[in-house]
Every structure is written in structure tokens, then in C-alpha cells.
Length: 101
Image 1: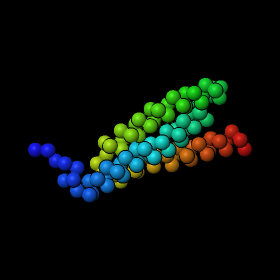
Image 2: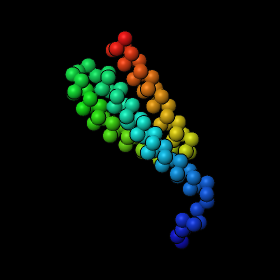
Image 3: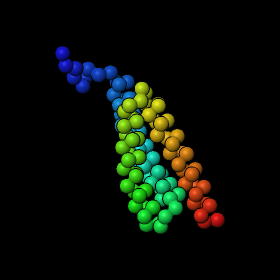
Image 4: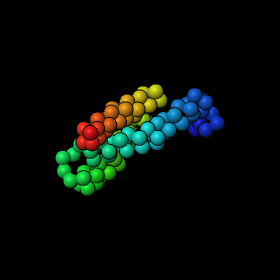
């Protein structure tokens, strides 16, 4: 027996929409902050550190996307993306401040 999209409850649809937004927007935020963090903290020439950070950003985005749809609830998905993003933002700010007083 198949269920159509019209048979799904509104709460389920909103949960999927929230997870999708968490994966798309939160994943992008996490990937960009992770890329900057890697580029600032790696002890190598800036060009090499930037390229490695850029390549790792795809891994960060993929992991954030997978995390958002593996969680039990949309709240956990948002928290699992926003809390590491906040931590990376603090590390980025501290690393930038330490290099440019």
C-alpha cells in the first residue's frame, strides 16, 4: 500500500523542511567556518593552507548534511550544526586576533 504526499501530516512535512534548511544553510555555515579555521591554523604557507581548507569544506558540508538527516529530531539537527559553527567562529576570531594584534 503506497502513501501519497497528500496523506503525510503537516508536522512531518515541516520537520523535513526544517532538516533541509538546517542541512543547506547550517551545512554551508559550518563548511565555510571550518574552511577558514583550517586555513588560519595550519602551519604552512597560506596558499597551501587555503587549498586544504577549501577541499576539507566539502567534507564538512557532507558530514553536516548527513548529520541533519540522521538525527531523531529537527532540533537536534539544528543544534548539531549551529553549536560547532559557533565554536568554529570563536576559534576563527581568536586565531585571527592572535595573528593580527
